[in-house]
Length: 81
Image (cartoon, rainbow, N blue to C red; front, top):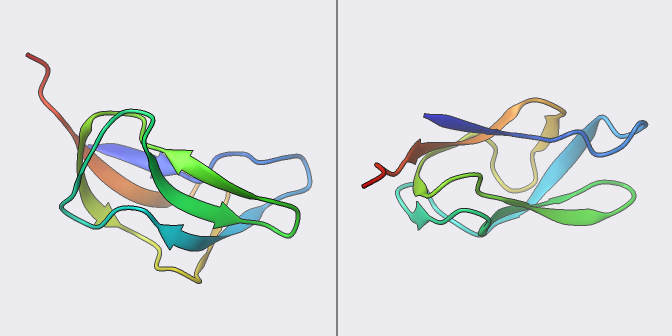
């Protein structure tokens, strides 16, 4: 299981708000496809999937604020052939 965490965004940024999920639980994703849009007081940005797989859990709903390092979603990695 791969955990997608809120990445470090800058020295003085400690949190970000989930603006929009581009995926739902159970949906397949591919590496580098955008899965969630986050906003801070300075900018908005998308977080891509680190792997091919399936979204198993979304940990924050739209409008909720996450701290740096918190898990945004969990993805089960697709088996390599």
